[in-house]
Image (cartoon, rainbow, N blue to C red; front, side):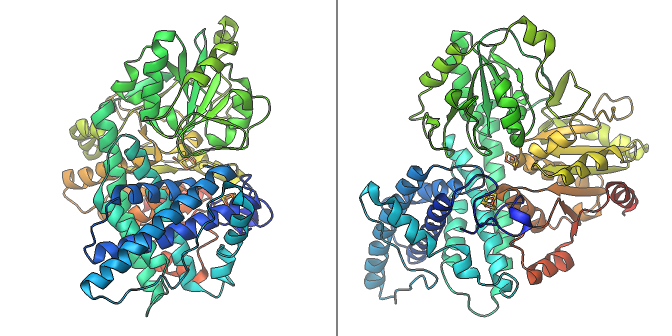
Length: 577
Ligand code: SF4
Ligand code: SF3
């Protein structure tokens, strides 16, 4: 196996024996096969659309594209059987698309193109064919197309595009759960997949970079669609202090990003008197009126995704993981752990793929069988959510752009009277690495007139810090904007501020500090590049898949700056124009 799609990759170069995430070589090969298959499938879908072909099951092909790409995101699915099924569905759909494409070519007199970077791989029908598929997957891995990572500049840009479209697919899939789709996003994904399935012509690096910027644009559309889908069905987020202490009673913990599934669970469990707690990226759920209205949304438990093996054993109820990030479960809690949607782990009960087929009953039974919390837990409180000695009583969430823009006049006044000198967007992903304390140290070192917008699970590095409020306004200086996809909100705030201050976004007193871990963060990074936001301070380490030539471009043309010393960086950012 070889995989270097995420930040925790082995020695910063690549996982080659087993994934640091726990991905086995067999699952890695199956994921490579699925990614290869979906590129070829995207190629035929794109070319068919180019010829105006009317695809009868277009919706199925588009949705399968999302499902397949999302499944291969870091910390999503580790279940061999699910990839065997996906590989066979991708192959079946590709076969149909290819037939339709060839027929359409004949109809309009066009010369049929072929995906020069990989032939269509036919997948044996029998489910016992996992071994065969693993062997097929070994032939289409990264090393097979990459060769020496240092010598093939355009490959780095192709990998960046591949990972960005996985992130876009994940966000688009979150909207799909809420029955929201955007044909433009599908069109871009098909186009990007067709490019990845074909040899470059001419300047492949320039073509790849141009598509990466287009991916950034498509991701803004995907984040916007998701924001809208949440705001329409769950209400506009508003500030809310989230309790961190448990309540006596039976309990279910929900992790991941899927707010729509959380709503369905709250609805199903409210009459049963089961309390529901959020974990990791689910914390912003408490900002939505349409979720807060459920009396059993009881509070938040724990920190970011990588603390689940420390925190889940102490949770006295059942646990549901709805999307990334899932880590290897311990036997202390695997029997009361459940997955839904794209996530999976072999042996862990999967309760459904979306709202149409999810069955909460095994999860509810496990919650009833578990002891639940009692008064002694209430007195003790939850395990420290941020690994810090000081435990906050609550965490305040819900500062999406609509809430912040409602206070825009006040904030602009505070800028004019010197109470606000600079805005910082500090967010992205969290992870195991010690260097991630950079983000805590940076925020702790900022000038007292700073305002910090945080988002994604990277917020757990900073959201316990007390930065006080802006003057007498009561608005906190540290604002939780939401999940990683709510980077969309941070961008809206920047655009509105620029308008209010009558300047360009690039001229705002704004510093962007991103922590990346997985492929959603790559998509968000490319959105920042597409919007021309720079510089972007990126860490804790630069992506292993970025080849030296691509890195040079990113640094010189796009203003990517690797993070350094927190105190020095804080000073430099404060002094920046
Ligand atoms: Fe390694 Fe990350 Fe790939 Fe897992 S997803 S195998 S940790 S590079
Ligand atoms: Fe976190 Fe996995 Fe990226 Fe949504 S949940 S930000 S790491």
